[in-house]
Image (tube, rainbow over all chains, first blue to last red; front, side):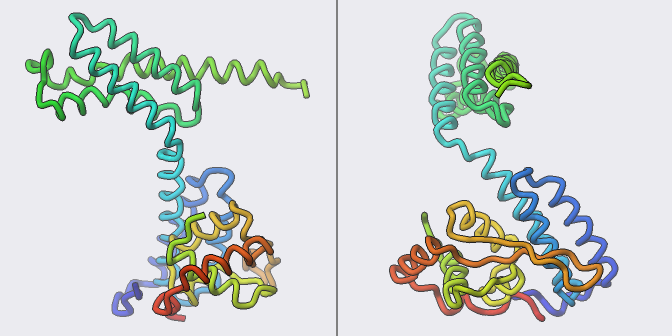
Length: 183
Length: 99
């Protein structure tokens, strides 16, 4: 798509915004991509038109968003396992008399997922705990949640506890495996 | 590696003069791709070992060093295969920026 040449913005405003976007790009890109962010920003100096410079810098933000989404949704296997475990837990919850089985499953499954992939472990409690609302909505049967529908999210708390535990245990295990000073 | 049309457009330019180093901005102008599309493609090609990169020191004071790109031998052979299977569309090869 061509840039609209009719859009006239003050050059100083464009440059100030571009500068801000460049800083955002460098700040938000993961470490292994930061040089690519610098590479993109370095090209700004070659563009004479201020609006084009702004558009170019906005590309850095787009690259950052791209990296973010790739990181969040990159571990497809873990996502698939998380959704399967979450759905299983939801079925167990809808069939059980008490909340304990579901809570225990939430802690255990989140623990396992966070141990398996500790990077951005906050994703896993959401994955497993949000399966119950999805199952309830898909089945169009609110069951015990008919009275208070927001209660359907109660699995988030045990799942978060499980994820924190899994993350810490994994970090501890990694630390013990590669103790500082040992090669 | 999957090679969508935009990646093919980049490969087509890089494969044209294999020994040449290209700047990101030049690639963008030739392929018509915006920086937000181009750089993820370049990083992916680099991750796959298709692209080699180097920094060029700034020739003028106050300018930043620029990143340059060209195909590796692996990249060239894969690019040729990909371009033979699905040639880059001509309409992609137009300038993205005014200057």
